[in-house]
Image 1 (cartoon, one colour):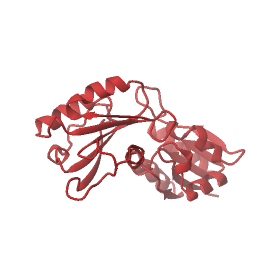
Image 2 (cartoon, rainbow, N blue to C red):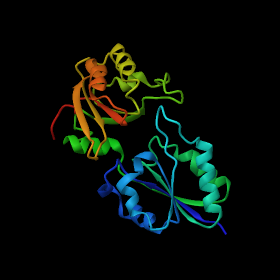
Image 3 (cartoon, rainbow, N blue to C red):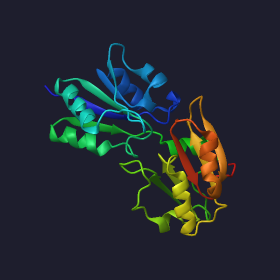
Length: 241
């Protein structure tokens, strides 16, 4: 007997931002494997008696290896259980989703993917700004600020990232923010380009800090802490809706 895995996107942290389908799957799951950022009040939607297993990864902390997480999913589903893999934000954005779906497909286990609110959308909404604007913010681009070693990726498209008419959202970029800013300014993006640093988005710990590309290192230092954050760069980052 083979079970089934639902990859459920938990959104940025506010349980009110869960989709109805996400809540339904949580309420029917036999086991929930959850990320750190999906813990807390979101887990209150899980069925009473369900196994709750923390498998989250956090920079600078001891975390489960990816192959171990994938193996847990296969093992739970192989016993016929309904499994929820609860991923923070939207499961398909910098969430190692494909590594886990590949493991399930190889094992012949069915799965579904339930999309959710990514942190970029939630941060913009919290700040009262859009991510696009006709004529002056024509594109949105999501990038990761850290490669597998935690360093700034070297193979980014710097020309595209320095486009002054784009909104760039940097996930996992606090540690490399200064290096990223230096590269963007060297590519021609003005130091006065608006920036917003958003941490704890949609939670009681939310902090939104505005500044410019040139002082991004100071923004990160001032906000401090180890709460995950993202960085919005572009013409809308300092504008009210």
